[in-house]
Length: 486
Image (tube, rainbow, N blue to C red):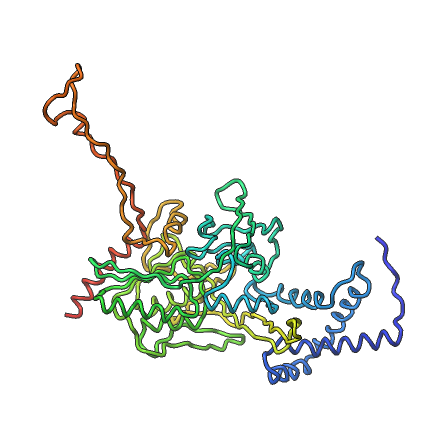
């Protein structure tokens, strides 16, 4: 490898460097706000920062060195985006730079509709791209992807060091197109390969049914998206009209969603003014979020959770537990996921992208700005290397489940499947034959070994053991509630 010696810069080069540094300083204002006023406020902060002025010229010099001397031409936009992404790599996995396309995709997802394969993805503690859970009824679920599958390649390229938004961009795309994934699944020695056709994904956030003989209403929240609280309100009102005396709410495999929806869903069960969640910001400032309306549901409540229940699911579950409003039931040895950080999305007032007409396409930054705490002050997110703060919400009751049950459960919990009234389809038993003697003639009577045989066993109906236990416990709660209200 050869290196060129340093040469003195000309006056024009120094002038260009100074100009570029000033432009960099001004452009940095845009990262901190979504209006002109906010940009001005940020400018005042930066003007008083000696550290920024000391370090910004280094970034300018690196930019110019790459731009002018790298073996192949590099687009200035790519360099700036790379520098921005580099800043976010020093933060947690939840903080991200969102170019215009990524920001637009995020908006579609929170509205409940987009085109892709339909999986909730996360970066685990080792920053490995992980399928937390496929979305019910989507191509990913139908193809056989399971919770906790590690996505190690997309289209043959490694996902090492990939960001969440980069992964989303690769997985989403026009309906009818395909994407190839390579999966590592715990307990399976070989890599798994999937080719999945993208479709238009419509997230139905609520699935509900009734156990009429037990007067128990059941609702499952698949995602805390834009219409979740309103859809759940309608389901709860139907339970009330039908005389349901207890409610089971299922947030298993629910990886979260919108904070507002978590608060609004919790408000359906709590009296007005009750604290639902606390956020603690930089410097220790605490901000409470409270119920703003009277509850729709006052029946006994059980909440089903598992280790995939995350973020908004944990806010809801923590509020129900701390206010003694509902009992949490989880598989034995499991807590909820422990995703307890607050991300604030800031739409930027300036952008690097423009449409075909020259109009700016808005980009944004998503920054972790606070941590979630339950009403009693329990931190939802784990503190590294601190066994006193393992993260997640501990259940009130635990249900022992057989090995491999989680995957079997997910395969029968897809929203399209009626998990409560699926008919038993018995195998057709063989028709009885008339007994014959050794000479081939028929004999009278219906006794004999053949007729004492039991008919063929019917196909076994899938049993959701965790839900089954919740139903048993709910029957006790209903009886106790009725005694108290007499």
